[in-house]
Image (cartoon, rainbow, N blue to C red; front, side, top):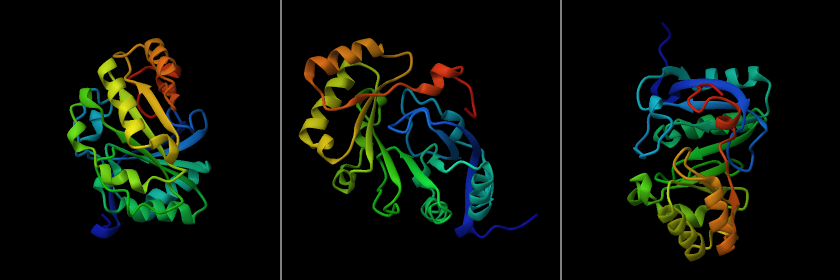
Length: 220
């Protein structure tokens, strides 16, 4: 068995190609690199299978798998990918191979070292997630126009919190903002009503992959 140096080693749950189900990139063909491990335990998490397990792979082997899929758009996700310090060189090598790279991250860890061309999707955690205290607000000044912020909302309380954060921190002036109802917990129609009533400068996000496939399907 080949020994992978620790600085080159990632714990990978899966690499697969589908369509992007969330974010402003929804609907586009995308290859996903899902890394294992997460420092949060959100109440509505739909990726608990990432908390443990996975296979140790070398960064270059992961990049080769992505290249073999033949899709230019790639998302590094988890779990929480930034718990791996090797996620940074992974993203850089994907960029070097000509990929357009997305990073889905919880907002609890710094994005300061993320390569500039990467499209950061920063998930801020509202109260009902149980992880509001984990939001790293130092990330907000680091947001750039090609990044985006996402809120997964489970209740009207979550919505009002997100609405107020968007206004207080000027998020819509920094990058696109998405409000996404937690699947099965918040009626999207209700969320739309609130958004329209308050003229929130954000867009509605629906988890497209859960519409197309079973909500618990893996690798889609």
